[in-house]
Figure 1 (cartoon, one colour):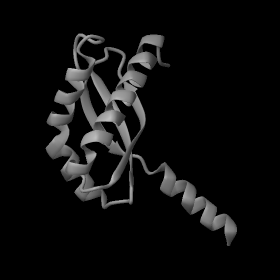
Figure 2 (cartoon, one colour; figure 1 turned 180 degrees about the vertical axis):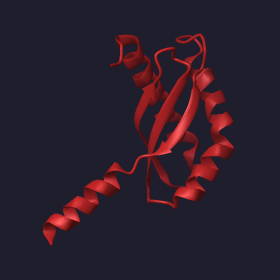
Figure 3 (cartoon, one colour; figure 1 turned 30 degrees about the vertical axis):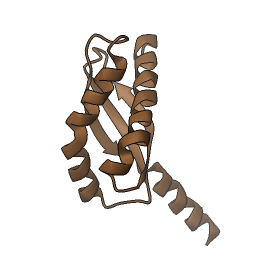
Figure 4 (tube, one colour; figure 1 turned 30 degrees about the horizontal axis):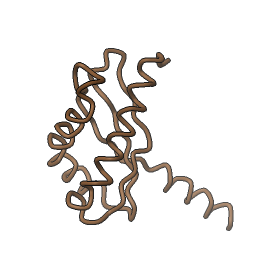
Length: 112
């Protein structure tokens, strides 16, 4: 169960990370469109799990490698943006959100 503070911080992180990926995602991910679908934050606000949706879909291994290379830069940019709202920038963990692929698969199976 998330508290009101966790909810507000997760929405703030989702908004700011979405803006960062929109502005700098072109150079990091070679023109792929990245959407921050969800952010889950721990109770102590120390770690955030960020779920990303990428279009067009990429291989999971290449995505993990690329996001790992750029994670410190993303966290730095996030820290600049939220420095007046939060005391500490949470550690970011990125995950590929495959819910759209799951929905497309179910839709394809229902049409058969």
